[in-house]
Length: 268
Image (cartoon, rainbow, N blue to C red; front, top):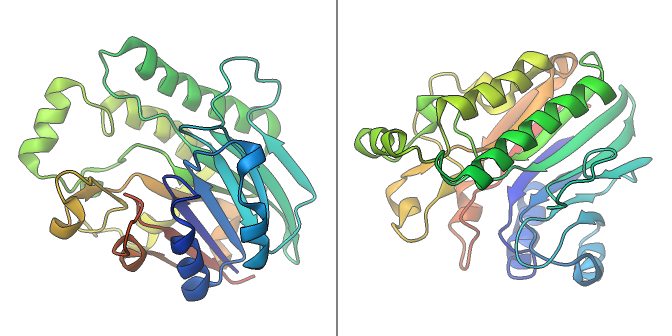
């Protein structure tokens, strides 16, 4: 079974990329981030024609998450439970039945945070990861079958940073978000709760593969980017974990998202 995650950066503009993803990968589950569309304008019919049912949570302008699934989930949750703060449409959870048991799938588009000196945006990012940790602690058991997919907007190791050492140090000096020590500590709490980074697990020493490339600096042509998109699996799923990848071909299409899709295969 294949699971694919993709920050699509506006679904209505990038339907051609979804079509190519399905043609190439034929995944059972696609998690999309930054769909940038109100719920009533989500292209449900287009997705249905491609053989998937859509479960979505978004609004116009930015943010928005969605699952495209060949498998009908028996549970769907938008946002965190009982969340009453600013609704930014950054998380959706579904549960599906498989022959090895029920799998919980959590699709995330984490805030970017901008800069440590931007009190509102930086603290919004901190609060998001705290809410995610609380959600996991209260609602889910690490012994369950769980997959977290999405754009975390954090590079966890220096091998996930491909913008050059000079720029890495400059970003740190200026407090620019993506790999600040505080951000890594927020993400580490999620790992410590009971997850592994599926891609890094099979690519321990890889320092040249990334999932986001800046448009303005032509980062993709230079392979200068960041690995900020993840698929995390709970430890009980490791025995079924078969393969993973980052799809540069999709990133190289016309009118692409600035992200590349990531995927994993489980032998289920």
